[in-house]
Image (cartoon, rainbow, N blue to C red; front, side):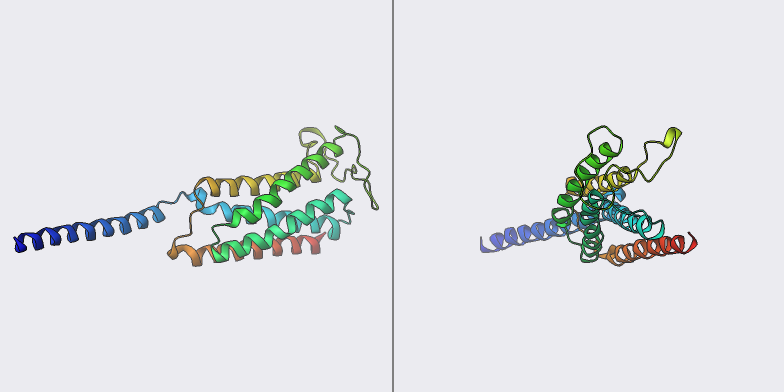
Length: 205
C-alpha cells in the first residue's frame, strides 16, 4: 500500500510539473502572439505627440504665427504627453494609459471647441492675449479648406487617445523581454528623426 501511495504521489507530481511547464509555454506563446497593432500603439501615440509638439513650435518660431490662448491650453496638454509616453515606453509602464488619457481626452475637447470657433460654428470666446482665438492662419481653399491648426491638434489628440484606448482594451500587455531593447530604440528614433526633420525645416524656411 505505501508503494502504491508513493506511485500515486509521483504521478500527481509529474502531472503538476507538466501543467506548470505548459502554463509557462502558454505565457511565452501569448507574448509572441501580441497583435502588432497593439504592440505599436504606444509608439504611434508618441509619434503623434512629438509631431504635434514640434509642429506647434515650428508654426510659432519658424513661421511667426503667434499662438492664441486656446492654442496655449492645447500646448499645455500636448507637451507633457511626449515626455510621459517616452518614459512609459522606456520603463514598459503598463499603467501608462492612466497618465496619458486624461490629458489626451481633455486636449480633444479643447481642440474641438477651438476648431468650431475658427470655423465660426460657435461664437468667439473672450480670449486674453495678443491674437483672437478665432484667428485662421491656414487659409487653404477647395477640398482642404477644413484643415485648420486646431483640427491638426484634434487629430493628434484623437490618435493618442485611440492608440492608448486600444492598448487598454488589449489588456495593457507588457512588452516581451526580448523586444524591450528594440522598443526603446524605436522610441528614441521617433524622437530624434522628428526633431531633426523640423529643425531642418526651420532652417530652410
